[in-house]
Amino acid sequence: MKYGDLLVNFAASFLVAFGVTVLVTFLWNLIVSGRATVEWQTALRLGIFAGIVFPLLEVWQRKSKGKKSD
Image 1 (cartoon, rainbow, N blue to C red):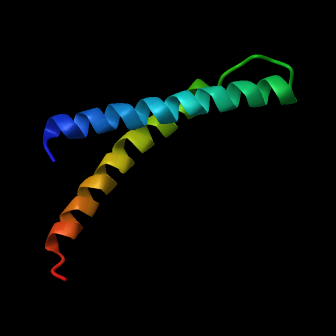
Image 2 (cartoon, one colour; image 1 turned 90 degrees about the vertical axis):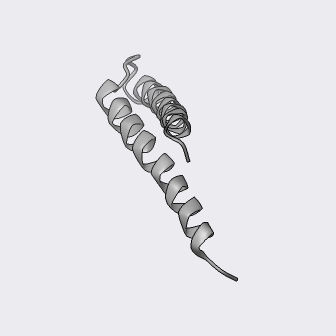
């Protein structure tokens, strides 16, 4: 996997995780407390974590598939 592909996968994973977390925390706070607030710190942390972990897992899966000889 090239570095450009890794960067695109990072950006895609980050945006999906960040967007879903923003939406979920917004709706949760709106329903539970009646305030339309978003937990930005949680969304950013989860986005960064997913952006790092998911592309690396894909790289490791590709490497392990290449090493197997069936």
